[in-house]
Amino acid sequence: MRAFKVTRDTNETKIHLELNIDGTGKYAIKTGIAFFDHVLSSFAKHGAFDLKLDVLGDLEIDDHHTVEDVGIVLGKAFENMEKKNIKRFGWAIIPMDEAKATVSIDIGGRPYVVGNYTPNTEKIGNFSTENVVHFFESFSNNAKINLHFEVTGENEHHKVEALFKAFGVAMDMATHVDERKGIVSTKGVI
Image 1 (spheres, one colour):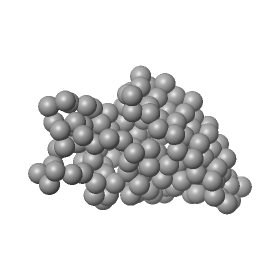
Image 2 (cartoon, helix red, strand yellow):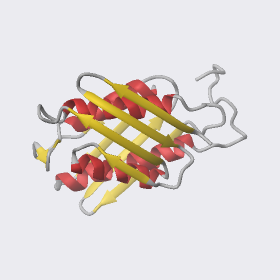
Image 3 (spheres, one colour):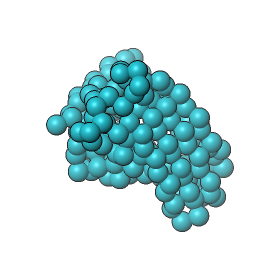
């Protein structure tokens, strides 16, 4: 079983995360940001990851530190994963009504993000849409993965939710174990 616990305790956030990569999509997520909980739940469900996340953040200031630090902690959990026999690459195209999100991932040890997301609104509930890209940057830098994404649509809720669903599906594909693979790199290491 590929299960990890990661804790982060700073002056801005206190986070405890439990991740089972080989899960069934069970989740218990409490970040204090309702919409963020919702899209992280979609990520877990559609990626078939068991995810438990308890966060106490400085939301009296804003949601930036909470979103950023969740990306850091989730990224560190995936970075802890054994890379031998994973498929390494994953992708998904997910529609949600008028919105469509595309995500492609390479778990190759080289963090890089190329994102095409332009919010039409500043907030969805108490979630700042400017933090969407920052979440993925924080995740990628700590998971050491290459992540590309694009989102189109009109409804901000649909756009962001489709993006997190696609993220879950792509990560599920990339982390899937295939015993034939060994280390999927001509270098011999990831």
